[in-house]
Length: 487
Image 1 (cartoon, one colour):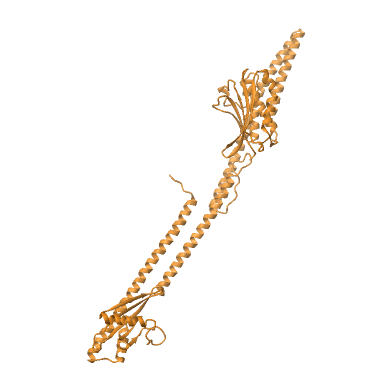
Image 2 (cartoon, helix red, strand yellow; image 1 turned 90 degrees about the horizontal axis):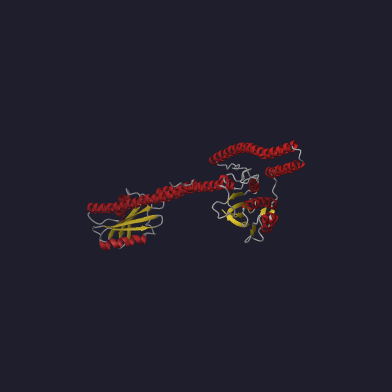
């Protein structure tokens, strides 16, 4: 099932809002256009009805008078015919004399309008001429930006030839109450939609910024021992509730981690105390036995041999205590740019006598390292770790074998790392101790203390790195993985 982010949903809502506004505006325009068409049609019907009314009244007047009508008669019948047609004006036209009667009884201006509209006079003349030519009703529609001018001409059949009736009305398409209501509705729609879109866009921009700041705070490097950072409030109520929940969870996680570390330290102290007691008890028992035998025996040679054995056991205990101090006394790192090739050469030189005595060859590989970009490490601590790894490899490599020190610069998950490898052609690590290889006092040699690899692990952790046995390698390979630069 696809999961969509809140940002994507808000953006979709914003698009739907604009789409609905466009569709609503289109529908409003359609409704307005239909109402305009109805208005034009109604005006056209009124103009046609008024023209027929003039015809009927003219015919009635001719029958009642029994002959020709005078100019005053024309004015009266046009006035009476158009009195019930609001917004319609008209008159009677003569081929010989032009306009012989005009009336606009529903004119809403000041006073009575008696003048023929000068702007439409040419259109009225052409209309009446066309009516006389065809002897039938002629309609004319002249649209403009704000109105549609509707005219109709009708032939007048009577004793006097060349007479026509005409009527004229105007349908206001982009003016008047309907148009004003349409413009007001469209304006309200534009203001509300644009305002809503602007508000939603502002909210989406601010919300995205707050989310980005939270993501940056969560992804930022943190001091050692801190699992979750303390997040600042965003000012958004819903997000602040999540911030408070994350801060509370971080506090609980820190408390739980502190308790777990304390418990682990206590357990480690117990294991370490038991191991130390075991490691020291054996030399003490051996020294006691030798001393008792020397006291019982009166042989000076036997006493001297016992004293030599006691001194050997004292040296063993001293070595054990020195390694314990190196393991437990944390030293602050002194990072500096360090050339790796000379460091590897010096580590090999310190063990060359031991390697020669065991007939083991030591090789160094440091090719491909940049000459100017040096790793920032503590050279003394790293040399100490390499000494332990090299000594461990020499002790497990048979005569005629080979131990190799390698250094390389690699990129892992976008970060630059320093990889230091120690390979040997020995018999490998026993499966029984692989899982606890870097724990104190874990060793496969009867004369070993099992502290060398534990010291290497502490040095790697101090550099915020790691050490491990490479699984599946052709040779026994220990990898010391350190950051090229501290983060």
